Structure formats: C-alpha cells, structure tokens
Image: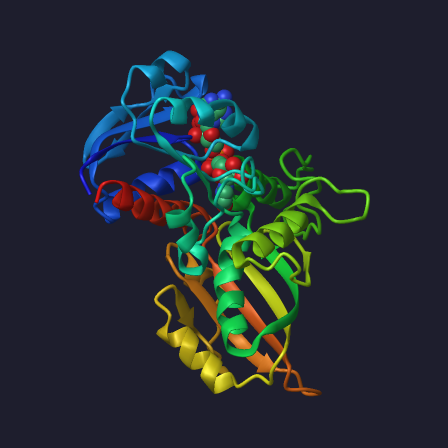
Length: 340
Ligand SMILES: NC(=O)c1ccc[n+]([C@@H]2O[C@H](COP(=O)([O-])OP(=O)(O)OC[C@H]3O[C@@H](n4cnc5c(N)ncnc54)[C@H](OP(=O)(O)O)[C@@H]3O)[C@@H](O)[C@H]2O)c1
C-alpha cells in the first residue's frame, strides 16, 4: 500500500489516541497525519512517530486544503453526520466509530473476521465501525453458529466507564475520590451515581422498555451476522470499572454442544483467546484484555438439563478491540484493495 494522508477526526479523545498508538504499532503507511479536534484543543499537539503535530480545528477550509485519503472518525454521531460527507466529497474514505451510519443499508457495518467480505462487495466511501459491545460479541456468535447453529441468544453486559469517553473516566475517578473524602456526588455524565454502583441503562429508553445500547447490539448483531431474524435479547449495564467490557452470553443451540470442539476452534482463531480452565481458576477478567486486540473467552459450560444450551463469558478492551483496532483493520483492508 502506498503511504496515505490520514486524518484522525477526534484525535484528542480516548478512541483518537488509541488510533494513533495502533497506527504506530502496525507501521501503517502514512505520508501525512492530520489530527482534527474541536476549538477546545486549539494550541495542543499530539505525538506521532516521535514528532509533535499541531491539532487542527475541524473546519471546512482545513479539510478542503488537504488531500486526505483516509479519515478515521471518533467524534460522535451528530458530528459524524455533519462532517463525514465533506471528507468523502474531498476524496477520502471515512471509517466512522459512531452510530450515525451503522444501520444504513447502503453502508457496510464490519467486523473483518466476521463479515469482511462486504468490504469487497460495496463501493461506499463511508464504512461504519460497530458498537464496542457488538464487536466483541459477534466473532464468538459466528464461531458457535458455524459449529452448532444458533437458535437464540441472551446477553448481559458489564460495560466500563471508558465506553463514555474521557469524561466517563473522569466522572468515576472524581466520584470515588469525593466519596472517600466524605463529600456528596452529583451525576453529570452517567444517569445515576456510578461509583460503587451498577446502572442498568445505557442511553435513553424506548417506549417498550429497552434502552438505546440494547437495541444497537440487537440490530447491529443481526446486520453483521447477516441474520435479520436472529432471536437475541440484551441487557446492558454500566459498571464502575475503567477499561474493557465483559459479557455473559447464553445461547440455545440447534445441535448438541461439543465443548472440546468449541475450545479447539477458539484456540485456533487468531482474533480470540481461550482462557477456560476451572481447575486452574482460569477465565478472562477485564484486566486480562486491557490493551489487547483479541476477544477473550472463558467459563464455557453446557446447561445441566440439556446439551443444547451453552453459557460463556466474553471480554475485550472496548477502546481497542471494540473501536480503534477494528476500524484500523477495516481501513487496512479497503485501502490495501484500492491501492493494489
Ligand atoms: N470509548 C469507547 O469505548 C468507544 C467505543 C466505540 C465507539 N466509540 C465512539 O467513538 C466516538 C468518540 O468516543 P471517545 O470515547 O473517543 O470520546 P471522547 O474521549 O469524549 O473524545 C471525543 C473527541 O471528539 C472531539 N470533538 C468533540 N466535539 C467536537 C467538535 N465540535 N469538533 C471537532 N471535534 C470534536 C473531541 O475533541 P476535543 O478534545 O477538542 O473536545 C475529542 O477528540 C463516539 O462516537 C463513541 O460512541 C467509543
């Protein structure tokens, strides 16, 4: 692939910073790197490849005067809707981390190891990166479906505060400090107090009682797995941890589950790590997945009453595997194909 001019749009945020680290680690071929952020970051710099680069305020003239090949977006859905089209009009391919385009039938929603083929079939200049909780779930579902067939899925999530960006991390940190010092706390980012608490709501509620994050996971899983009728139910919970998300996954299968075959397949997968040995108390925790690219799987067990029911514990780094790493793998695939 020839070196590209790459814009990171939201470069000062949690996902933006992770983009920069992963581009460096993977020696992504970059000619110029353009870090865009808001007016608040005017005068700040980011470090890339031992060089300090000035942050650029996101403005039309700043986009038009540069020849950008690839724009990695992490600025939220409203701003993505406002700015992505301009980048594509100016010749860039956009990989967007927000929910703005995910359910648009014309726009691919991709986890490369699950449905990477859609990138070859689409001519869209915008590619959507799925929700962090969806990205870690679907590779496991795809693998289980291939072995035994999936009848129904029930998931409960345990999602760290970094899922809400830098301000989420600050809120947990500040609340813990305040409570230890005997001061009261007032929720601002999260809907309830998050310190020493669990919040069974992520995003606003719909009339039927589901919250936004639950519906995102349901709809996105169906689209990525190309199973519009997939029977899947989700409860999403914000937990007072800083990094990584965990999911308790219960699956009803079409065929009896052979745990040995399942463990073998997970071990052979490049994008998954099996941590499943109860004799050694081996199972993934959030800490195991932090800073890693893979999905970690453990606590595999078949229901005592029937061999067609499987339970699992699935963990991944939400900012890395659940956002920046997945987006960069999408970019590597499409830009590689375009420059072959
Ligand atoms: N955190 C996760 O686990 C995760 C996972 C998957 C997807 N995502 C998605 O990724 C996006 C960013 O998340 P994040 O966690 O990185 O959030 P964040 O830490 O709050 O960062 C937000 C970024 O957007 C920039 N921004 C805000 N308003 C802007 C404006 N008007 N013009 C230009 N830039 C602006 C900020 O720049 P300033 O610093 O200048 O304000 C910052 O660089 C969201 O869509 C989120 O849903 C996040």
